[in-house]
Image 1: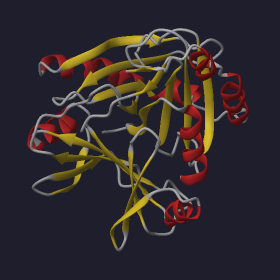
Image 2: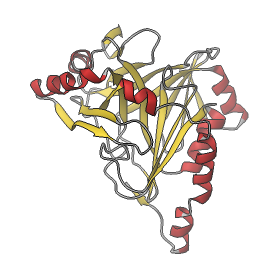
Image 3: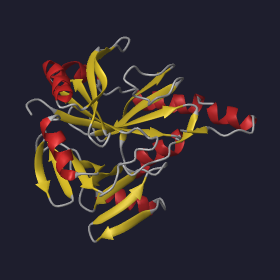
Image 4: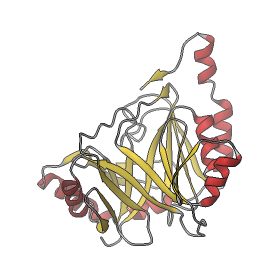
Length: 296
């Protein structure tokens, strides 16, 4: 679909210290920007939670031409039970495999050229044993499907993606060969999201947003958030429509023009994140009271 591109996947994290170390030292990603918020997001970026939270965008390069990860951290939540909905983020990088071994990070060999590891909290990463490219090494994000043909129908007609590969149980879709793709894997049972509330973000020309919303409504599909403007003080105002596919996978469509302005890499991102982690006394607060953070 003209002008559309995959942007990022949202991960809910309970232990910010361990998670950031994994993304930086094992995956070798860099912090692109970091923001702290005192209250929940109108587009439920932090899930169905109130109170203080943070957003860290991290990846191998600018979001203009890289698929990145959004790490959302709710100060009062220490753990998010994972369902069977998220099946892995695939990255082509032998360097990550070496980093796992060098740092005694658990990594499992699946085939001669494929490995698997997990981030703190249990999210799976699939590692292709090949030289990491100078462009984006992130290949695809794979989601579970209870009915592959139904999922393909939705992601092609509503999201506007093209099928690049397909078998009886799997399909790989995207907007162009150069971008990270969305993988769909038929698990033959109901998709259970539990409490992690993952989300794929897709940019499109702002003028396409009303038509995307209408297409979802006409097909009697779920609209989680009607077309809305999100203000970020001192930054661009973006418009979004948030849908859910037939298996409940959240998809956030965002106006590309404003998002490019909003998503510029902040050279102070690392510093802001490190300061936030250092100033985070939430674990200490719970420990003093012999309490543990809540499970989502």
